[in-house]
Amino acid sequence: MAPVEPSFKPPYYAVIFSNQRTEVDAGYGDMAARMVALAAQQPGYLGVDSVRNTEGSGITVSYWRTLDDIAAWRRNTEHAEARNAGRAQWYRDFKVRIAKVEREYGWHVDAGPADPAA
Amino acid sequence: MAPVEPSFKPPYYAVIFSNQRTEVDAGYGDMAARMVALAAQQPGYLGVDSVRNTEGSGITVSYWRTLDDIAAWRRNTEHAEARNAGRAQWYRDFKVRIAKVEREYGWHVDAGPADPAA
Image 1 (cartoon, each protein chain N blue to C red):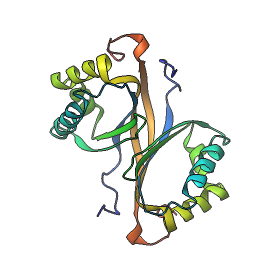
Image 2 (image 1 turned 45 degrees about the vertical axis):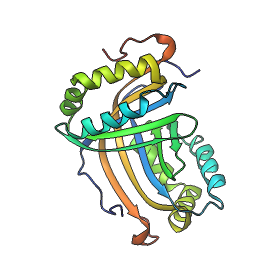
Image 3 (image 1 turned 30 degrees about the horizontal axis):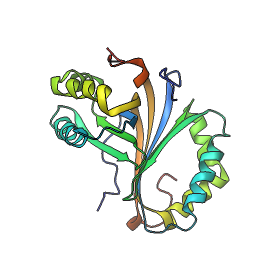
């Protein structure tokens, strides 16, 4: 069961990666799984939310303690190679946004219907 | 075709809504479409990215010019009613994160394989 309480204590940073895939599937799943596992080993990594629909649209939001942590992950060699392969084969279009999370709250059905942000 | 150039000029704000749906589908699609249309009419609205997968996990990121614009949208009566209905029926679990977008860049396959952030 997911926690009702916020996961991370603001301020922290989010990398919002919204993207559209190509039709090329070969190698994509392995790369994506590897990047999730590799990111989780990096200093300052907090977590990730990732969803892709059947039309190939995806949003992945990764959470990091500091901007320096994000910059260090960007310089990771295997990550850089995966991004290069992504532009060569797997992605048609993407946007990357770096954002400072100032506030968060969560809600779970077990908490009942009251507004968690009221 | 999606634009290569960034859509919005930082700084601006993102509301990252990550969620898990219940099995209840009745009314959900109409409400979701109505909220997208209604949000787009609000002052300070910039845009939205939204994806849901077949397991009922969703991420919706809406973009706004200021925190005041987000607060005003939150006070919208129809929006508040939709959130109440969401907690009563359609959502099992969610998190809301308010974040200040400090940097963004985009890439499209037509731009060729070079790293857009190099």
